[in-house]
Image 1 (cartoon, rainbow, N blue to C red):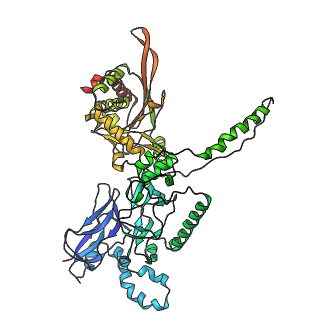
Image 2: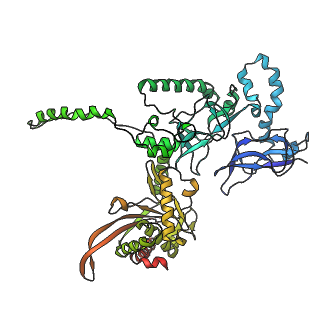
Image 3: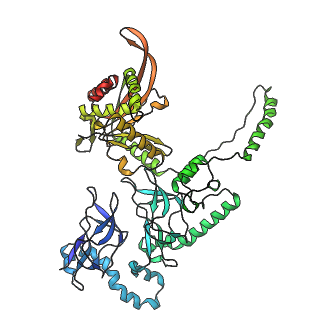
Length: 554
């Protein structure tokens, strides 16, 4: 008997899924355990296996389309079996008809083919028979709505392998590689470098050389612009490449190098043409760029020579009482990155939605300085003052659960676990990796994790799951010598702690003025969850823990 296959719920927050790819077509035999399709959820793209044997009688959703959880996506049964009644029972008869109509109308369309143009016939083509695969903008983080193509690693006409990185995509969290998972020829590029595309938009097509991809583009809902796109983009890329070649011999875009190596080279101003690759086929990797030592360049001579020329002119103007100076007004602009867009959106929502209030306290760090010095004499890793603050906050949150809470609209969630987010500054903005269950970890353990996450953040290796789930956040600018500052709450957290530098100042102890080491901390709190007295009590506990570090070991 035929059985309905419904869109599964593959994560606790999933409400719908996108059918990324069908591995079977109507009429294929299916066994229990076979992968029917790949489904893209709000977390990841996962394989969907069949739990029954039979023939695939019906497909209710095309590749690239979305369907709600529990909606009918396919029907399995005996070959030739009538499944119409199942669609009616599932309450999706009306919705299913449009998906079936192309198959039913195919014969009439074929009869009219000699008299009609190829354009209207394209939507009737069986897309599963086209030897090409659509590559869409993937969902690379839980908050991502669009991604910017930073660089294409291949051009139209290039041969690609299943594990090749097609492009580097900047999301709201990091820059990541997009892998096509298909071998063939790159037939189409739908988004130019520097441009953004929404999640699930077509960004490329890989398949057999010479394949007509028009039906795939029309099915993707972008037929008018897409039909001209391959030729236009190819010409544009060719023109841009020719212009760049004529203008300068320093273009290194065609040099074989990993995305990370390109990023490091760009940051350091290194031309990849000057770097020798050590990987297979001469491919340049991170190590090659980091070990590269540039030679002296004669181009610096004109700049040096200009200085003596300017000196006499300056000397000639010196006697003038009111010398005039005419400057040139100029500026530069750059597009807002996905990360900066996310920071802007989230912090604006936090500051303008959550009523912030701030409580500042001074902490005597004399004992913490002594304790850190003694610990680093025997500790396997170097412990920083930031590690002390993370551990002290974790212990204090156990005693003040209201600070470890979140405002959820109609309810307040008090977290019984302690996950501390540590803000890390990177070139593009700010990332917040999370030290999970920080209250149960030693200072050495926390030190190792913080250093590892900071390194990953700066090299854009942080994964989305490493930046999720914080219940409290710390922002430390002490290493910059900041005296005092306030921070915006990292929602849905109820609080964030701003940590300044340790200042050597005179303090009064036992009625005498003596040298002291003071660190100021400021707690930003959401007044919908936390009151002033609660915030002050938390800071008082934090102060006691840092002024007597032995308490951290109890």
